[in-house]
Length: 133
View 1 (cartoon, rainbow, N blue to C red):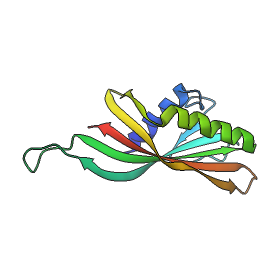
View 2: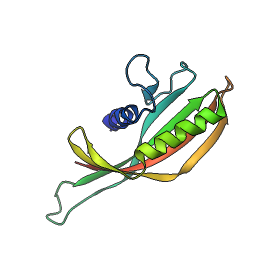
View 3: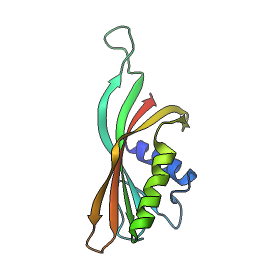
View 4: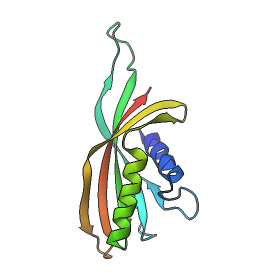
């Protein structure tokens, strides 16, 4: 399931939300302490796979993982701008990533998480994903 973080991170980089190459601002899984303005894409278990009609051992047609995206920024206004960019890039995305068909939708509205120990603003977004197997 870790590859889902890579796919979504690449999609966010393409949308201009950050960078997956030096200097890295989009991280897989763990949010690094530096830089101050950063994004972490965390894979999460989602719903059960979508199965087609057929024998009981028929392989699933679609996987349904979720991803949590943590956004951190020194300035609240910049945080909200980045959250808007991420929502625009991912909510109701339909396309192909790494050769697999994707449909992505926002699970619920972004949640402001306050500031961390270094006084950086944070927000969380969760997206549900339908991905071709």
